[in-house]
Image (spheres, rainbow, N blue to C red):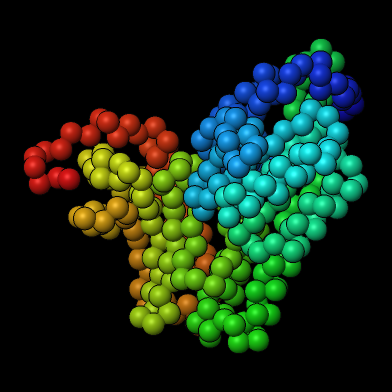
Amino acid sequence: MNQLLGRLHKVEIREIWQSEPGDFTPWLASDENIALLGETIGLDLEVEAQEKNVGPFRADILCKDTASQTWVLIENQLERTDHIHLGQLVTYAAGLQAATIIWVAARFTDEHRAALDWLNEITSEEFSFFGLEVELWRIGDSPAAPKFNIVSKPNDWSRSIASAAKGVQGELTETQQVQLAYWTALRDLMEEKSGAVNPTKAHPVGFMDFSLGKSGIWLTATIRVRDKGITVGLTVGTTNSLAYFKLLESDKNQYEATFGMPLHWRERPGKKQKLIQVHLENADPSDRDDWPRQHAWIHDMLERLYKTFSVAAKTLDPSGYQPAGNGDE
């Protein structure tokens, strides 16, 4: 059967956004549109501020990567890239020490695309530089639809190989080499299976954090090489950790029913981070032959936790918590 198909027509950016600070920046900073940009580069972003001072310059949008809790700065241009904005990006990176820098423009010149590629090559993995071109398209008389195209991004694969090479040279301990390989393999599995939870960078540490879509509340997978175990859970690490934890715990039965099994609720009085966890015992992270089973379990638990808590993490109001007595702090 022949079906009638429409034809895409490119829309001039200035037809929709006349002013960069007055039109485009507020549009991009909305929850729906910052999520669209985040999906393009594989990050869950939460806007912290617009027109934020960083050194002598003012960044258009300041966000948090809700998985790593690191800063993400977005610089916008509704025109061709220029040297002034490139200098601002480097200043932002220097001022924040560790950050993801996103340069959004109508068109990237070859030299500015090459400059971002070079910055990604020479900086450590604490820094990430993205170049995105923004376009507008419509079909017939439909509303204009935005599209972000990646023109430059960090080469995570090269950085992982470089980290592994350092381990061979003795800069990583034997345990760290296992950790790096373990999380790299998990990331590969998660990218292959896809799902609600996005994998993050692999590091030679005993844990990997994942975004839940809310700054200060995230998912964590932890491996224990010495006592042979794996833990996956939700971590609450905000200034209102106790309030969030108590509100969640008040509906414990409902959440555990959704999750499908009992969870370990760890208030940990006196500590900022409150934990809701599930454990896989007698699992040796150094046993590479068992990695497929372990990684499949981690992926399943992360997906279940996301389904169970993602809405609550974004909608719970900590001011709704009323301590039962003086014992709660």
